[in-house]
Image (cartoon, rainbow, N blue to C red; front, side):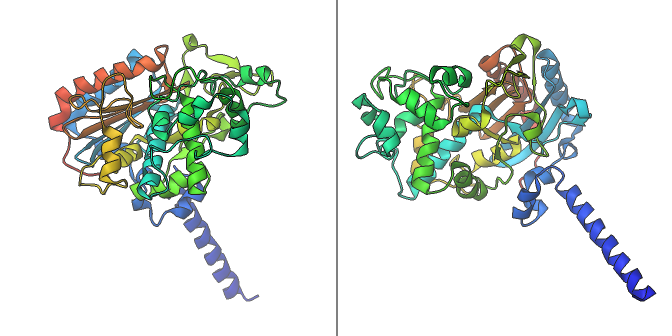
Length: 429
């Protein structure tokens, strides 16, 4: 090999290394498989965004309010996104994404969103309805039900199950006596299993019991009902739940970096935060798999992936804001669901009736969706004036689900002081 050939070979190899390094920098907040799906980094919010894009002198007071909130509740880090008329005007991280690594929170970090996942799942159901593949009035079980497989037919004894509709599941009106998805160890012992229960084990356990009330006559918050909705999406779409949601719901909405979260720190995605729990929150607990190990509650206390469409998604507030913009009936961002489905999702009856996917859609208060898991708290609040505020923390507090009330109060105070000072920009572009 000539000296000239050797030099050319070295130059080509060096160029390849530089290109590979640059690519890893561009996608340092997303996994390599995800990077391959993206036409260009400008189309990926979590790659594009950083805190510098929301640094404005007139909003320093907002920063102080946010940091004071973190100190008040001993929260390590949080991410905030604000939209106005479907434009992302503000996206910023506060505190630590991973304190042990000295990594500050950025708007491109993704966090477990807990029950905000139910809004994602409900949207998936509405997409299938718009395609004519189901109706929310369809029954779930029985001879004409969507889930008429032998597994379900063999365990259901109470024929009142045959009255349950998709809408009942969406509104937490199915009537189930138990909601055991956060009790894997207890279920394992009760069913005398050799390994942690899978979703089929939960189906057998819950559906073999009589209903607590007639479907549609009352409501009782049910994660189990949204696990069944995830099963319905798989059955009707012919795809695994996560694949359908990512391909047919999130991608059309412009969201490319949402995932089903893992259980342990080592399972986290490259741009996912570290989660924290307070000592007073029962910080350490036996592993959900009943392997005899003590774990931090947010890393192995529950089987997060099993929650599926009930609470397993992780993503950034900015991308959640993009999803909300795609289902809110406003014209600025094209909706991925029909007007009929949008109106069904936000239809308000009374304070005793859950909306579809949303917790509440009271006209004068706006729409809200909360989420809580060990290590995280989330609130999505879309106000009647077109503003949407989304905050997710990487720390759970002793308040549990009630933490959302304090976040709601924070939103109200910050809107009064800083809404008119929000920049006229659209970070979605």
